[in-house]
Amino acid sequence: MEQATPVKFQLETEPASSRFQPQPDVYSNSITSLYGQTEFASSNARAALVIAHPGHELLVHGWLELARPCVFVLTDGSGRTNEPRLDTTTKILNEIGAKPGSIYGRLSDRAAYSAILNREFDIFIRLAKELADAFIAERIDYVAGDAAEGHSPTHDVCRLIINAAVKIVSPPIANLAALHREDIWLQLEEKAFARKMALAKGYTTLTSEVSAALSRASADAYRIECLHWVDGISDTRSWDGERPFYEDYGEKQVAAGYYDRVLRYHDHLEPLAEALSSCAEKEHLTNAEVQ
Image (cartoon, rainbow, N blue to C red):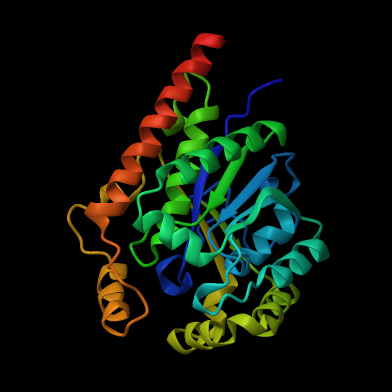
């Protein structure tokens, strides 16, 4: 079977607003108000979306409608309540013709957090290998997914898994830095934007998160969607000593009695990143020898 060469992109977790203005003359892959009529939209490129939690697909709903990617979701979104929210995401995907991938709500949020905290790295290594196999089976050309931003450890682990999976399936001479460096921009026209906002406001298990997001910026800020191109080293190790938000939040959760221990970058995420990177490199070299 011909091997895929997926290129990696990452989602913006905040609205684009004035920080990211589409520049059609600069970005050849820009998608502006010519919704559904751009070169990107009419291409045959096969996309994958890999997200940590159900609901993240709403951030790029316009792109989702265009690309109709194969969607992989790491957790069921149950949080501390143990109430999964995967059904709503499934309904959204069904309505636009996107399909769930082989990894779809595989872990509860508690299980994912516990696995990171207890350094059960094999769980995530197996997920990375399975994701790599799925990229090949689905003949994926490019991958979009959560960015590593130091806010949620599960978001960061999702990015690490994406990076490892892409490394595994990349051809031995692939120079990812030379491939498709343009970011993907999308500025939604009125009907597409209305569909996106209606789905966000109708996602009942995310009501508080949606309200908080709309209080930080106007709804119109979510009209612009951007997938930033990332290279093979864009992971948690590029923070250069910054203290992630989840450590501060974890200390408060421990003090409140929700958790027994604090999840730390240097104790948990950094060694996981190294384990996934090492595994991906070995798998990549093995594949090169086979070829």
